[in-house]
Length: 143
Image (cartoon, rainbow, N blue to C red):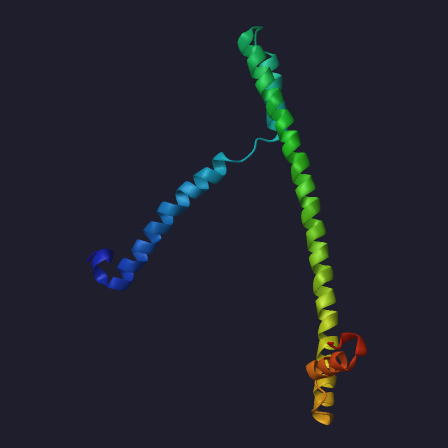
C-alpha cells in the first residue's frame, strides 16, 4: 500500500509538501546567491590578489576587488542611513499613536457633550446653529 493511494487527504498533503519544496529551494538558493561578501573576505581577497605576479590580470583583479570594497562601504553607509530613517519613522509613528490615544478620550467627551446639548436643546444642532448664525449676520445677508 502506497501513501499516494491511501486517501485524498494524504494526496493533498503530499501535493502541498511537493509544491512547498519546489518553491522553497529556488528562493533559498537566490537568497544565498544575493548575500553580500563581508569586508573581511574582500580584504582577504585583496591581500591574495596583491601576492599574484605582476601583470594585467593582477591589476584588473585588484581594481575589481577595490571597487567591490568601495561599493560595500557605500552599501553599509546607505544601510545605516536607512536604519536611522527607519528609527525616525518608528519614533514618529509612536508619537502619532500617542497623540491619537490622547485624542480619543477628548473626542468621546466632545461627543457626549454634543449629545447632551442636542438632547436638552433639540432645535440647536451644530449645523443649524451655524446656519442660523450666518443667516442672521448682517454682513452675509443678500441684497
